[in-house]
Image 1 (cartoon, rainbow, N blue to C red):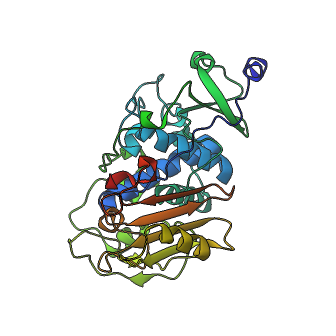
Image 2 (tube, rainbow, N blue to C red):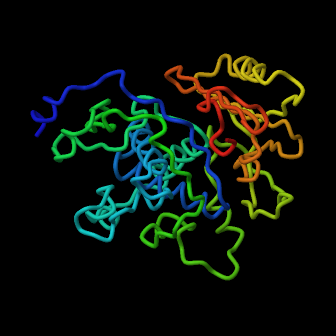
Length: 323
């Protein structure tokens, strides 16, 4: 099988850049999405951050493609009720029953998932929607472009793929996956009054590293948020922007703030009432974003504006929910 896979040429340089994903929905939905992604990351790529980021990117790419479900848990567990035909092998081959990650490995996988949900993109795999290990050779691999190899996994995208092919909107609602209950309180059956300890255990991992917890007030819309939040860590900037400034100057400001950071995320709001200064960021604040800038550890950069506030000639420069 490895010989057959090696015969398929690697189309280096063809990876279509992925758009940063910004999670929306209630706190419970965001936590379920994070843990579905973390499960895919760990069980598909082991305790390896590079491989995990690539797997997570494929899952998020599928969410945006009309051929796949529009929720993250829906994508990860598609076909899991069948012994064959599941999209992510761990969901139907018994892996969830045979072995469990250590607490430390699980938290590392949740961290990778949280970073992706707050805008990190794995540029090496771009908009890949398929992958497999190099010891199998599924029939579909001959019909797609092989664009990356990471560890023992090969990644593929559709031939002639275009950015507009990823046109599906994220549903923002995540199903409960009972099979993840042993790993994730967010997937446990609902109880009438969850304890403070249970809520604290399901807090979204900080996208760029841990910090001291502090209490958080409910937002104006009454959205239910975790009981604890954390200030932004190294490489994450939450900024109030001058609404009267030239919107192109936001990019200059972001690049200046990100100088010296290998990986950086800059989020800005022109409405001071919408700006937050702690993470996780409520969905209402994400929807009110005016500008975002991302740079990953390969140097790839992406800047996007709220096009309701600041129309752009190129729609690819628009935040997805601000078109």
